[in-house]
Length: 66
Image: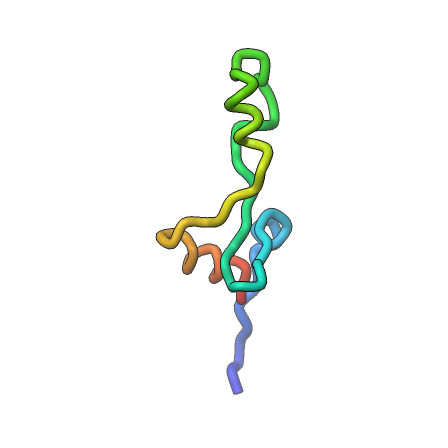
């Protein structure tokens, strides 16, 4: 049996969610402040969550210790 276990990055666990198909869901950035200069269309686009890219997928899974 393994001696040590990988600790999960608690910040990553709070921000990322694993979907049923095994992909990782995340919220988009740039929606927290300085919203007056951003166009309504741009702000609408930032509302919905999105899927983590395949390039980052493995790294995010490792930080979530899954």
